[in-house]
Image (cartoon, rainbow, N blue to C red; front, side, top):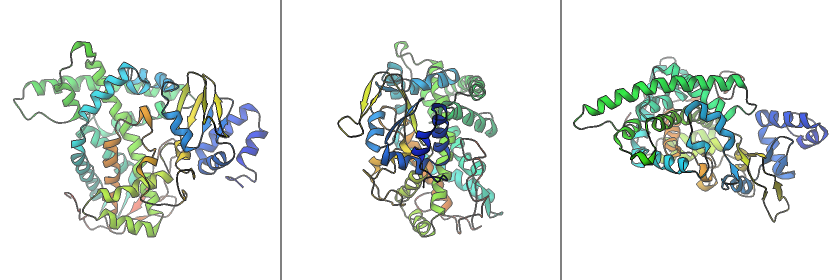
Length: 434
């Protein structure tokens, strides 16, 4: 038995007409992705549907994601460009991608990570302190979204007019760019409108920051926006104010909802396992905060934020050539590289159904793989686990009874409600300030 049906997924799929096949597959990746992908890995690891092709084994997923000139990010362009302008993440191995990724990597300095981690911890404690008297917190709005958006303001230098606007801007852009698989025009137009609002706000902020920097004799602010403004690019580089604003908008797009979902889902996985929860609390209290982080990433492997990454093939290519599953992917095929499925592949992971810390980091696909590995992965690598760590440093952290204590997506692509309880004593924070 697979999922909630008395027959297997592939048996249902094979019996359906072409239109129904597509609908079933899309439904299963929303509601039953773990058993669905397990059956595919075991019986049909590369599944060609009438509209797209699933790739489910770890080796094949990483093969697709490392062939950026064959499996391209072209499908993202019509979702991204009208919102933030021509964007590097929607280009493969092009001058704009090479140049602007390099510029942004230069200003997102690894030396900043201890500061970012401390900032995330301070903001998490602020949110938890505000809820301490009640002994419970609605985590999505008050913590999971709050901390990343405040990081966008304080570290990236894009505070926005208010938190409500920033939450909306983050959600509408993420939904359109990465979740709008059926190309819903209403979702797209909401993101385009958000792009106009962000551009107008950031144009004003750019002028303010430029005037502020001009009036300083020293001690320039170290947020990413200010660093870009203080950097003089020759005209031939082509990184003018419009390119700068495009990349600043991209920082919000890539940080808000993704980090919020990662915090909520990894925390829930830890709290669902009492014995492991106890070990995680011990690790959270260690002098080195990094000792705790693997609990978060393993929890997120068991419930990742994205089931798949999509690509468009621009030439014929045979995936898994030389194996019994080798499959020709024709040019023009939309390919779903199922990273969530790859995280359960027994070819590379031992006992993948079990929460096991200490797995090799190179098996993690949380930040993608290959040419388009997430630009902000180093910031997220301290932001997400530090928020979860600060939660577990509180006494008596526990899930509330369902439905409150279960993550609720409210029919959308992102978590919207999630409650947990905790004790009222203030946190004692090893390895950093409270």
